[in-house]
Each structure stands twice: as C-alpha cells, then as structure tokens.
Image (tube, rainbow, N blue to C red; front, side):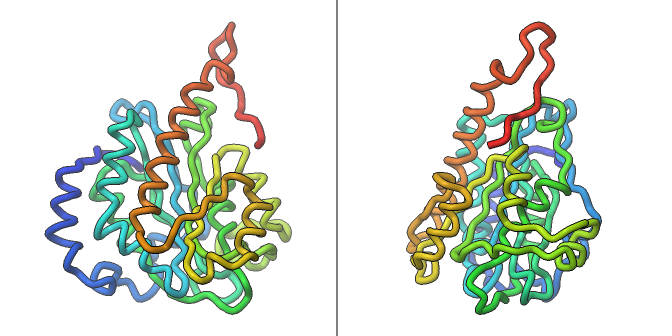
Length: 287
C-alpha cells in the first residue's frame, strides 16, 4: 500500500466542505468493525518504489473507548492536514501513516482495528473515518494499548526497516494505564498465531527493536491519575508525554513534532548504522 501523494490543498478543502460541519456519528458511521480493518491474520506493508523511495512508516494508535472519540474526530475535522503539512514541510519526504484503534481486550467486542500504511490524503482519511468508535472499555484500570505494539512487532513489513535499517515511529494516544497481561487466547482471537501468554513489557521490548515508541497521555480526569503516570513511566520512561486536554490541537502538534524529530534522528544516525566498507545497513539496536 502507500501509493499516491499527500495534497494539503485537497485535504484542507475536504476538511472545510465535508468534515467540519458533520457530526461525529456522520463521519464515523460504522456501527461495527469494518471487515477491512480486521487484524486477524493480516500483515500491513509499507513498501518503497520509484514514487516513494524513502518512506517513513508511522503508526498512530487511537484509544476509542469511553469518551476518547474526540481525538479521531478532532483529527479529521480540524488538524490532520496541518499535521501532515508540518511533517512534509520539515523535510520528511515520504511519510506513510497507518491508523489503528485500540480498546480493551477484556471487555470490548473489537479491541483492535487496523488500517493500511498510506501516503495520499484521501486514503489516509479513508482509514481514519472507517474506524469504529466502539466507546467501550471497562472498570479494570487500563486499556489494551499493547495490542498496537504487538501489531507493529509481528504484523508489519516495512522496507525502511527491513531494507534500510531505520526504525519506524509508533505513537499511541490515550488516558489510562496499559493493561499488564495479554493471554494467548485473547491474542489468538484478535490476531491468530500466538504461542504463549505475554506481558505488556515483553510486547513493548519486542516492538522497540524496530519501532521508536511514544505514548501521549491526555490530561483529562483519568489521565491525571497517579496510576497512569506510574504505569507509563515504568514502560517507556521519557517517551511518555502528557498534554493538556483542553485542546486536541496539542495532541496534533505533538504528533507532528515527534515525526519530525524522529526523521532527523534516523537520518543523522545513518552513518553509525552502516558498514563503512560495504555500505550495508546493520540491524537497529534494541532500546
């Protein structure tokens, strides 16, 4: 996937003529998971070609439980064109976005949904608006954020990683702790192929081999709880970032900032990961 280019002009036009005045229910019209976003047995590819020879794969994981539907709504109605413009204007040549949505594997009917890696404005928006805002979750002090990391670790194939030794960027957004345990039965039901129970720490460590992971915590009433900070700082250290909840633009600006910083970091470290005699790339180091 990932053909086409991003047009800021057409994306901004669609924002003002299609999305701005539409309700959340009109934009996100699915009342169950779209079959094309079913993660079971799939691998999402971020491929390079003559049109896109230097891709940067970006996975964005959106919490779609409870009241968190305001984040995807704000992205499509307000900020997504600006996010992409900032990323491209700062020199990222081929950003490819894959929107995913996560809920609660202990409570929800559809705890994980996944789009494709896309470069064009129309297709990026297609997958975002195809997301089912289940609005579930439960009183179990957490959500299944590590399903996004499991997907990145085991169900993606990206040329930037496999051929050029560069890490992808993975950003999850939410306001609760990460559930600690992922039983084999739950993983098999969602993805298939699991061989054993896993912890959130094990999943994150595996994903970090090829992905730079950040979690954006929204400081609403839930996001201000000490359990949220304690959980995420233990898992991600300074890659846990809190933003105020009074403006979704704060979240969008952070996505753009992290993407630009990641691109600059990966390109400044090319010399350190390449073999000076052959020019071949070495595998990225575990964080």
